[in-house]
Image 1 (cartoon, helix red, strand yellow):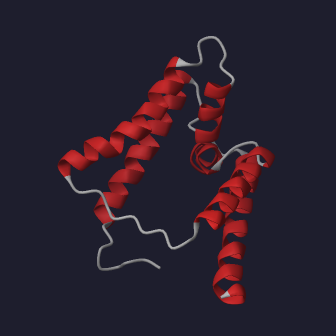
Image 2 (spheres, rainbow, N blue to C red):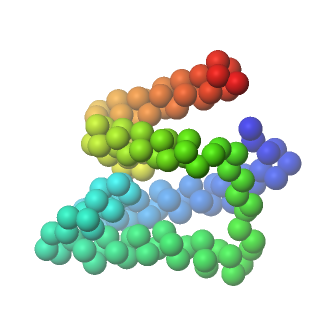
Image 3 (cartoon, rainbow, N blue to C red):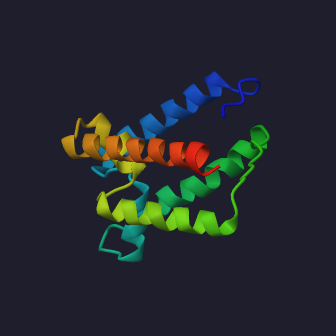
Length: 142
């Protein structure tokens, strides 16, 4: 459910622009796709010349909220699921990432902007699966 009272369209737009710019810069300047699973996976099985930019990218993901917190308070996080459900969900997302040869950031952000047919199919599959899971959990189980 969207909290329309606290919805911040300008902040959301700025975040989207920053993600798009960072993705474009990584591709144009480094020739790399901004897919988190591939970047993190490359750290787990490193190759020559592939560690530095990956560490910098992951460090940016960790440092960015800390810098933001210096300017404005971080939004409150509320998770209404138990730990077991979160673990199962995380494992299923990881399994889907392996079967889909990439994650939502790699396919949905980088792949769609490159008009990759494989990414279009993968993103459509992510979305349909997400819609189905939400429907089942919200309307059939509860």
